[in-house]
Length: 227
Image (cartoon, rainbow, N blue to C red; front, side, top):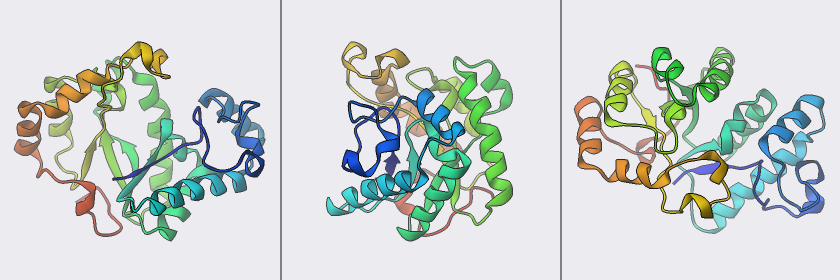
């Protein structure tokens, strides 16, 4: 099991008095758009970010869960100052790998239902690779087809284009919550369709044809995606 660091939309683990710059009057994290504006304007206290993410780590450890990998809600850990915090936490808590590179082929990304997340995150991941190359990151596919928009044909093209990677995460959002009952209904995700994809024998067979199926528990230490 991994840790999905959160700093937007949800309810914090820390007491509100410990993280005033991260929360609104309802004691919830700000929506992503407001959070990014606060980040860019210098209104986000980075010590508070670290305090909250540490609290989230400790919450899992107290439950007997030691994370095998890490990422963040809406990929916000890729913002440069937040990435530094995430990397320090990764080292301190000895987490083998962190999600970084979206690697779907550009032609697929541009024709996908959701090209904007790829176009925003790809440059950040490339900059990160230029400065941090200690092998602590891993690549992933699926960002442009999140929420039930990925089909087997497209998945085959993505996997084939990235077969040179030694480890590749397929990023899906399986679930059972009906859209109208989800706090993220505005995303228009079809979680059940992603769940059907994960449970499909065709999905597992396809991955096995191109990669050796594995999981994050197989990662024993700092890990790079390149051969």
